[in-house]
Image (cartoon, rainbow, N blue to C red; front, side, top):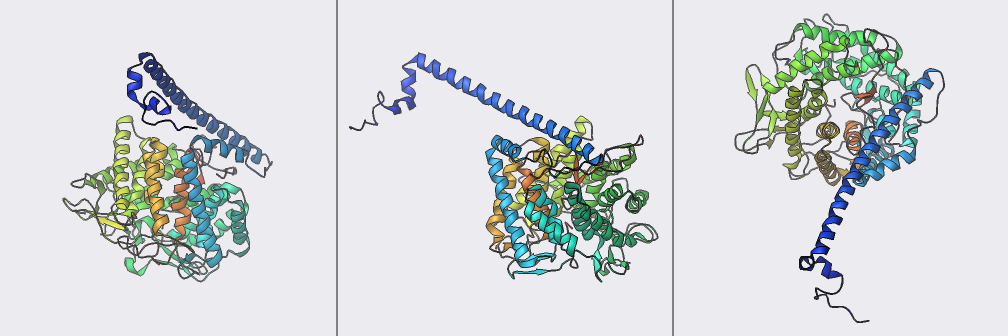
Amino acid sequence: MARRSSSSSSSGAWRYLNPAYYLKRPKRLALLFFVFVAATFAFWDRQSLVSEYESEISRLENEINQLHGQLRKAGVHLDENPVSSEMLRKDLAEIDPINTERREKVKEAMLHAWNSYVKYAWGMDELQPQSKNGVNSFGGLGATLVDSLDTLYIMGLKDEFQKARDWVAESLSFDKDYDASVFETTIRVVGGLLSAYDMSGDKVFLEKAKDIADRLLPAWDTTSGIPFNSINLAHGRAHNFGWTNGDSILADSGTEQLEFIALSQRTGDPKYQLKAENVIRQLQKIYPSDGLLPIYINPHSGTSSYSTITFGAMGDSFYEYLLKVWIQGNKTESVKHYRQMWETSMEGLISLTKKTTPSNYSYICEKTGGSLSDKMDELACFAPGMLALGASGYGPEKAKQIMNLAEELARTCYNFYQSTPTKLAGENYYFHPGQDMNVGTSWNILRPETVESLMYLWRLTGNKTYQDWGWDIFQAFEKNSRIESGYVGLRDVNSGEKDDKMQSFFLAETLKYLYLLFSPPSVISFDEWVFNTEAHPLRIAPIHDSKGHSTDIATPVVRPFGRKQGKQG
């Protein structure tokens, strides 16, 4: 057969791509325009249907979960959550294939991290991937395993979750002659166990959470009620770290409220909540007008010591928990003072905010005495998500201001990553006129704070840019931190030199937040769950009395679908 000439504009399929063909034929041009308009309306109709579909699915899920909870209250226990079917997940996946593909990539990363831990460090606190062995960074409490429980459950990794559950039941012991950080043990172990209980309904997790919390409680037996930050798990001897000159740390003392309130709700024993909430009452007595507390507090007098004010290390999660306890308490009168303290502190945060030149990046300064330091930790990148989460509690004008600040700070945090050769952020940044940002401490230990904020901002604004930014960060982790035996941090984000530690919070937080960033907002809905500072979701208890107290939580099964002081390896 003879091949048609591709140069002719009057024959073959190519002529339809030539604009002249339509200009000479007005009727066909009109028909083409009609087809274009019809296709456009069809597209927007489809988007509207998708939106309506997602809304209806979310409504039905909520109704089913409520019925499920009522059945459990009545003593009827179902093996599976009715809304966790594979069919529903496939239907949702068809709505956005890009997010589905990204979510599955994150899930595969979690499996790679988890399987490496199982192979080389099972039952130990953390994996050293390059050495291919484990290390007990937290006294041998199985930190990575406990930190990973809810991530495994959310991702639907049932076999992996069951194996981890069996280890908790059979091998996890807290009777150790070890001086544990009250803060790290609370957010990772108590938080991880409570979240696993809230999701699975398995009482072994609640029993273990109660055991470790009972061992931590003597830390609050101080003159002021401000806790010591370290305690021997076997003997109950509490003290503060030598490098703080005897002081307690603000974040370490003000970041147990979510977990201890939740534990009191689930056990019916008020002692945990009373100890944790007394700390806030003591801090109220010394709360400054700008809501900014120094990072060191004297546990005997309950007064602040001269020290840095920061939304980074040793300050951060205190402010986070003021907002989240208000949410956990259903925003009722009984927790109103938490919201009031938080709003005061946000005015203080605004007073610490500056902008760079030439790119106009917003950043949060640190403060010592009356002097501001142009330094911001990557840890402070939790703040955009916190601000976005709290914005709706304001009036319209103030809410817009707070949300705008959240978005500006998120842009800065994303560029912490984009400004380095590896596209991974350093530990902290300094800001100089005309230079925008410069890496200070140049390591990266797989921290979650920026992707945490991106997840909140995407859910609360619907702006897919935040998903794209999160994907960029995930790809940078894949390129620079993934090795055959797990994930490692970088000793230097400029050179790409690797360390030898897979932080437990990489599985607990970083990968969980990335997975949720690419999941429908109904997966761990903000209406039903509040995240502790280690990304462990705790179910918000229903209100049972006229005073607004949340008690006697029924534990439904969720559908599967410090932070902060991580140690460099």
